[in-house]
Length: 74
Image (cartoon, rainbow, N blue to C red; front, side, top):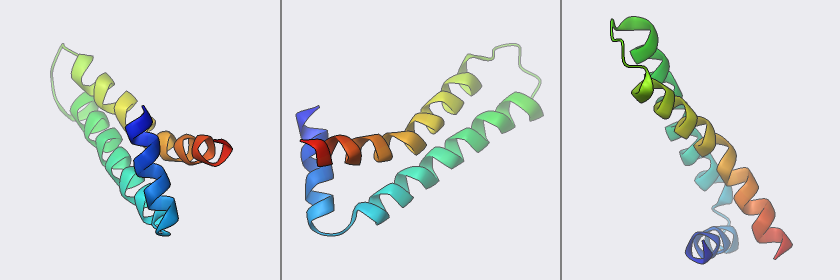
């Protein structure tokens, strides 16, 4: 966890936190979209993969905000 906070701190020092948030948000959105596509457009009985993709996507969209707030507090 320390390494992740260090990367976030370095990104904030260089003024790249907006780009970092944008990239992780975009990847998260694509994962949610892919999970929804697998769930709605395929005929599979196994719903674990789409659910995992959607949960990871939402976490990637929320994690940068939480990460930079924690980095600012420390």
